[in-house]
Length: 262
View 1: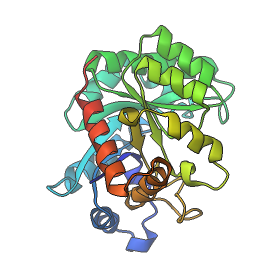
View 2: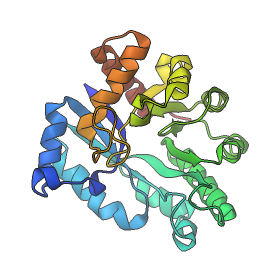
View 3: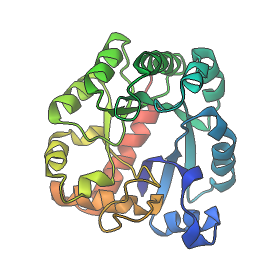
């Protein structure tokens, strides 16, 4: 029923499950999470994520992964993400998307050119493979939007959205989906909830970004995909919909995103 569009399955805190990922997977199924996309942040993670996706996909849980390099990685890693390398690694069917890529000037302000060049190469790979981009942006919204527009990127997700309505509107106009994480449930996030009210329902996604950003009522704990229903619940309250309706809607949106061709 629920789709977690962005989680880091290889980074989860497995202490509650005696160190076994199978426990977290079982918790996902109990929470009726039936689909999740495991996100890659650097090439060194590929094998671990691939093993998870192939081992735990079954009739009750469909797992896929992304291929990409996070903008906060070291310059050498960013530069290693050539368009051709991305294409070669992301061609198989178990890879659903390209990323997480984007711009982050909050954590990495001294390598803007390398981040921007890496983003362009990810866009090129996305366009060649017709697979969606996963965009991370922090304190770089205008440069992010400018590059997406200049490079004619029109297929992807602005993940863990925390910006204003103007930014959301520009991303939507380009063709992107907006994904909300547990941040939307935080007490001090009313402005973000106001943005969520304006996002067209057919362009809405939900995610955990686990193990980070656990939603209320789990805030302060390590996050996991089994908590994505709490994000849906927050949005259901906003939209005056049932949690099941939000789950069905966002799962349908994710399916349509993956089915799109540019």
